[in-house]
Length: 360
Image 1 (cartoon, rainbow, N blue to C red):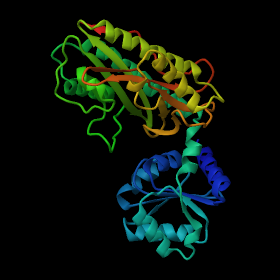
Image 2 (image 1 turned 90 degrees about the horizontal axis):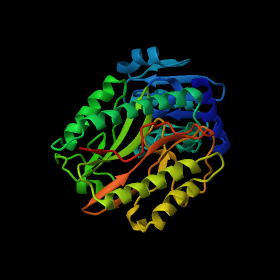
Image 3 (image 1 turned 45 degrees about the vertical axis):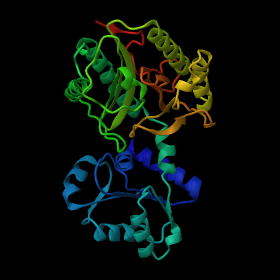
Image 4 (image 1 turned 180 degrees about the horizontal axis):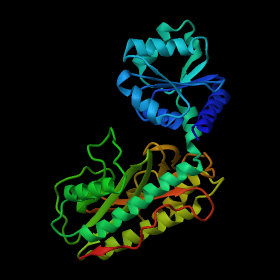
């Protein structure tokens, strides 16, 4: 698997930029190329040789978890960079490192800095198309999400707080073999937004306790063996209004229409338009404030981007999310999301019902 991944990235870098060598600094790309998730640099040349440079504290783990790599130890900082420079000397190399200070250091130490290119697109180009093992792993992550939504139906009740439900779900997820990814832009691994908090698409977890009449958005993103699945369900609690039921059904129709629209060759923008059209016709267009979805894999958000102006075509074995929502300020929100793989009719990885469940 990793040998094919390496060749795919190398081919993308050569086709786009004429590079004969690639180097990965990010843990996601290192894992994609080697099977090792940790600190280091992976270098692959056109002869197919793979060198994994790690600091001493990572060496043993790198040896034990990487596949078909020459693992080299070099201390952090200058020595690690020096060893990397010696490996790529006189090569035209595409690297995924977006750290400006590292890039400037590399240019200063290379005899031919014009041969160094910073661009992570070849890595994303290769990663967008998943192999069978990747799809299987994402499917298992989605199955764990389904089990967590079953737990939601058991545990959601009046008086339970958003923070407490998050703690329950994280605990159960880790028991089931998953772990929460981390985000730089939020303090919490999950989104649980009740009542008026649900009107914020990326609401922070609070100590607010659930009340009768609430709509409760539960957005679960979990990693299983490196790969991510992402899903959202919205629950009702107690006596909910007819307006809430109407909004829920609009979002459900939009989301299901988007999933049906996913197929090889359709553009990302067309899928977004399909979802947005349903919401627009129902009079809630101004309340759908984000794109319809995104790619998933080793990162929570990665290409392709399912948004209105993106003319990129969906291809078989891409994995994406479809997640329209309606957000009514100071009142409530509804979002429904599935992880989807592009492959004929069997594409929805999330099995938990999208019928409105009202607890209590």
